[in-house]
Amino acid sequence: MPDATVGQKSKRKTEVSCGRITAGVVQYAALIIGAFVMLAPVLWMISTSLTADSVIVSYKLIPTRVTLENYVRAWTFPSNFDESVTLGTFFLNSVLVSALITGPALIIDSLAGYVLARRKVPGSNLLFYMALATMMIPFYVIAVPLFLTVRKLRWLDTYQGMVVPFLASGFGIFMFKQFFQTVPQDLEDAALVDGCSAWRTYWSIMLPLAKPVVGTMAIFKVMWSWNQFFWPLLIINNIRLKTLPLALTMFRGLNVTQWGTLCAGMTVATIPVVVVYLSMQDMFQKGITMGAVKG
Image (cartoon, rainbow, N blue to C red):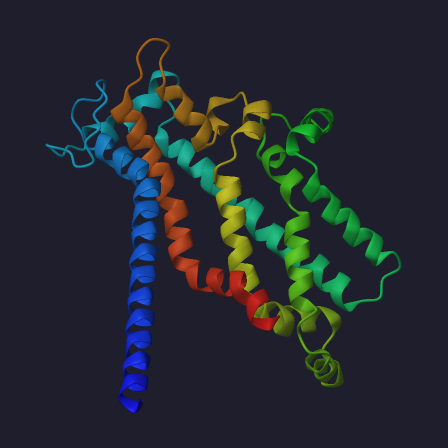
């Protein structure tokens, strides 16, 4: 009987081990397939940008002959519309707009979140719910009133027209408020005892503690502002002020699209977002998992 019992336990352990191995193999296979599905278009884009024939579409993920002529053509192609612009002009416009939105928006959102979380302001709950309500309204619903406002302010064809309407967001305020509510009140009380003003407490203590949220929101805001297309399309007519997503539409012709040149431009447009994510991925992961860790 003891031998039979030992044999049954060993059999169960073997079955459990085989089940875990099978589940692990299935999970890894699903991850590999999912990663390939997501990365295949990116690999095709890079491969096409390095392929000499820029008219005929190739479905090879590895180019047979690598060339950089598409990147040279993409850099100078906008000069066909205006001799004073290159792809670099649009690239710098996108960098400027993204920086002008991301930096001030992080300060404004974090300040609003800090006040709503720590200060007893009359009507603070109403203000918070109003900020949340903006997350439920599609941008296309407010696009026309926003356009009329910008036109009234004479901000068409200006950087401020692309930047000012997006210097605050309900999502950013929500993220910062939820984080600041998890910080122990004792830290703030100790700072006040040491003579710190409300601004110094926010800037020197609370904001550094919120680095994971800052990194997370910075990535979201950079990606959103960098990929903006619809709003600049509405308010920008001056070719010298166009951002990179708008400029990429210039590479499509009425009858023929130069796919190699277009893919080269898209590759250039993708690089900054990847760099920003890689530089802030640790803070991003901490910010995303913070709610699960702190419960």
